[in-house]
Image 1 (cartoon, rainbow, N blue to C red):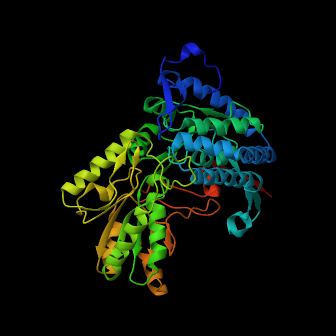
Image 2: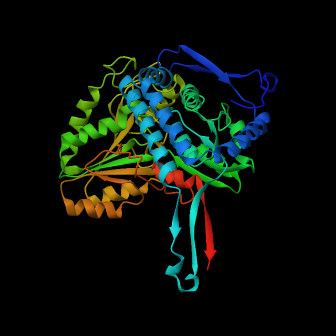
Length: 469
């Protein structure tokens, strides 16, 4: 938090940050009251004026220097993610490296994606005109980020925004604010003026005040559907982009390498304790291979080791809190009482929830639409590809779909008929390429752009300059 805010402006409340595995206290951050949101906006307005005047090469250098500083501290940052988020040490190190890549890609956009020459003479009525367009800042961006990737998700907002010359007020998850604060400190050390990025720790009331401000040029949200709905109603007439949690699916056909598919399913259903926003929930399997696939998947899932995320041998760390783990177990218990078959898992010890696999879940069960992050997957048998496609397209919260098949014609046909995307063939739903990949939610007004380039372009506006004669 930066700017003209005095200690007396703050409420006596604080947000305690704790280790989700053992409950150890990690620190406290201010629970900023909604009543002083205008002071945060005031600071961001000053930051906006400063940021737009930073030359593009300096923006790029700041981002590149920040990436270098992070690499120098990769062990400490990985340990912070382990402690705050509960990811395993391997997963946390991977997240730090993704953060570095994102900052470097953002620097490249600052240097090279400044605008284009417009061929006015390509049209008869404007043959005597010449001009170009440039990419200009939007001003103030309010960014709301989740807990699943506490460093990387913040970098995905800040990198493109800074590259575009904007100021940002970032509201990280109350579970994981320390990673966001640390990232901002690296940016300041790399030369970014302190007013350009403000970390606003606080709850829904604060965020509501921020996104509704007419001084804000854009709201960028990654998180749960209910949060997106609330902020969409509050934002008013401004640019809003959202990447909301969904249900990824894997379609397993009769012509595929079952061992390869099992590994993909385990990785994407249970990695990071099932808390990745690009993970899967639905595993749709053709009947010819269903029983063999089920046996292999159960066996592989039971091999996963849960426990202390700081230990290299651990595969699955804790849920973000004991309350979340208890809620998931309660929902699974309810599904079992209504006829679902438990194949493995559904055991809990504190915040550790064992990787869980169900089958025979009725079509009306809320588990098919469950978007909360958890290590839970649901198997469903189908007879035909037509049934598989109908199921994959049915969920209103669908996100990614992976298809495993050795039949090229079938793969191309399914890729064409799957609604939305991305669609991956013989690969897991975890493929995220920040250089190129983009996707659109089923909700037409809620656009999820995952590549750095597209986020950068959304966080800028074009200005056309035209000369006649």
